[in-house]
Length: 274
Image (cartoon, rainbow, N blue to C red; front, side):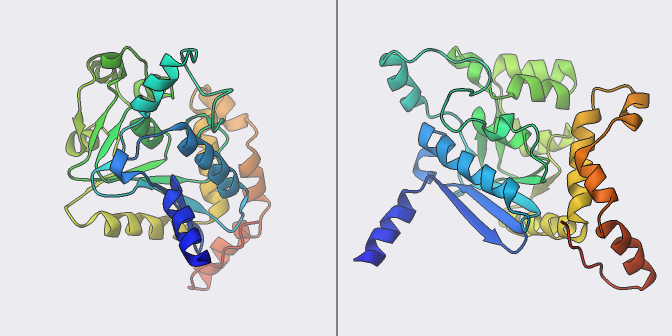
């Protein structure tokens, strides 16, 4: 009976969270709803992001969706319509005060790298989740879009902000205003996607990226991510002189000495992180 109850609880989880060595695998687990993001999903994700950031044994994460049809189609519109009918106030930018705050799209101090494994539709909030990751690996059948304007909404989880920063303005505005879909191949051409995997090859492709990142010092990964984010809008002179918390930790870590030593001794480095 206990086994049956535990299985039922696991099946009811909106998000699966698996730790494999130094890698966290976060899987949106509503395949029958194309991994739409309801309030419960956001609540579960918030706890996962908190644990992921605090667990020093985890060096990077992979975010994906269950099934082959969708990474995530974004906000659960059936739930939204019901909430609107019940008198919930309309939302705009961000999720402060809402379920799961701060969500990934607003965790601006997240220091560990995230890979988005996009295995189908990444629409609306699903696309916004992928845009908040550092690397995107997409199956060749993947489709990206921000269709909010067609629904009387706005890409308020960072889509307007991130797409116009990651693409040329005219290109980004075309997709934002029209809600048009973008193929994986087109996303790669535009620089939004790091690699497109052939049918059946997505997991192998993601695994290669994971292996490459695990070869790097975890504190270097954190420092690079922090510096890239914080310096992006600074004049070059200020970028050089600014203080970066994770770069300070890297600079004073044993890993800073271990890398050159391992190179000289012709052996793989033994990273200690913290």
